[in-house]
Length: 201
Image: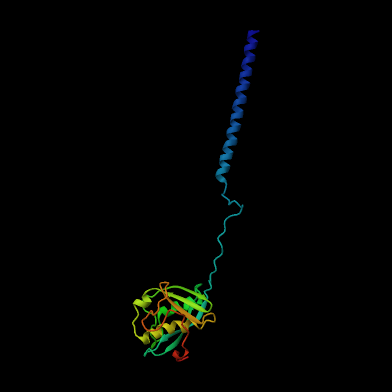
């Protein structure tokens, strides 16, 4: 009886060990498959589609505009027009006109009307008046004289007054009005264009 029980116990133990080994192999195999599968996956964006680079226009369009600028003549008596075509670059036309005036003329016989190193700080238009705010160099670097002052003032005024929304120009230096910026004319109020100063149109 004891012999039979020993044999039976041995068989039960053997069956149990076999079951444990088989189940262990099965679990390991599943885990290995999961790890292998995880390594083979390709990352996909959250929306489920692959990222795409937006198409680039091979011929980008750049808006250009033709401007008429007024610069001084050789005698500093009259303003003469100069036409040029420039890239707008998203800038308002009024600001673009003043920036091009600051650069100076490209035509022989015409002369700068805005002093070197002058910067346009801001330009705002309200009720037909353009408030043109220059840096201090417009005053400190000016060459002086009543004729030179007239060229500076009227080149800006006549150039901007071409725009239908501008009738007059108020000059500012570093955001402030001055009674006489250049020492001759009155600049504390808006200035209208003097059409008789333009020659050669």
